[in-house]
Image (cartoon, rainbow, N blue to C red; front, side, top):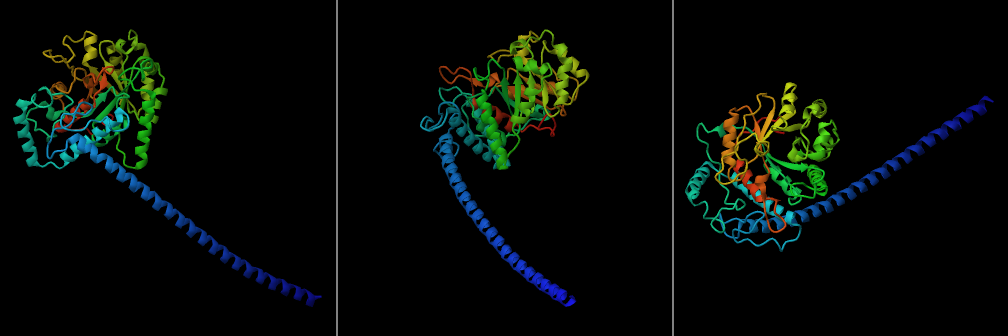
Length: 457
């Protein structure tokens, strides 16, 4: 019996060794199969990447073919500093009309604007000290003949000249101490391509775009962008974020009517949506009669408004300060939040009768009155009303004299000064040419920028 059991154990042991050898061989075959499959997948992936690179190269070549004709249209076919075509207007030089190109009017204007900004920025980056001196001399000589250029002998605000270097500020000039956090260009609507706004912001970080919100006027009147335009803006920002080459783009929402009242009552839904989905970092509250809000009892909204400001510390809340909102502003100053800001609008002050001077930029009228910023040093302040392309430098100097502090950053806001009539049925359109002229003015002044805070994000 012991002999038989020994034979049985020996046979079992032999069979175990044979099974182990078979399993090892099967494992080796499986490893070889897996390695072959991995190599095949890698080869397929490389092939797909090669096809994708070819497509990207073709798309880049097409973009180059599109940009160069646009540059030739905008800067003229001659050499050197030829005359320039007015953005959004009629040609000043010999450029071709844009009616032959496809796409919407806003996209065509946007393409020309992008070409202009690229040419101007590259020109400024290549400037030298000698070139700056020569540019200043040229501007002094040409200042006497300012009305001779363009068409009809009058200098149009949308007719652009050859970009010049930054002017030097005299000793004691108030602008030397002015810290400008933003140049806010408000009232953008469906007449402007979101792609154009993003392209401009990529090059000029001090530019902020103001979008007006009012339920009964949204998408129906000029200065109020439609919801479709807002979706296009969101898609454009998402597309740029995915490319990896994305600079912050500043947008501010100007709330009036029911939208403003909802925020005053403590509703955070709209502000949260604008911040999370569209990237609006600043919210202007305009609780005045001219913006469709009954301002007779604003003080009763103090607690609810403060709750919204505290609930969203990432957003800066800007209150329009005038005679109607003065009581609410004083109450907010008693328990000031770091994300609170005040905005002084000369046009709104004129409507309220708190300024004897006219805020409209008519010829021969006195400049609008600019109050000093609120005494609380932590409140970011801004100025607007009566600002145009022609008086922007002078008004910045007056604002700097009123602020009178190198540690008090402010921003300026233009809206009415950026509108123009482009033809029958379009009496109040956002003028990209005027916006470009204002950006050039601020860029050439080379004003200091504050450190990154709520005032300069």
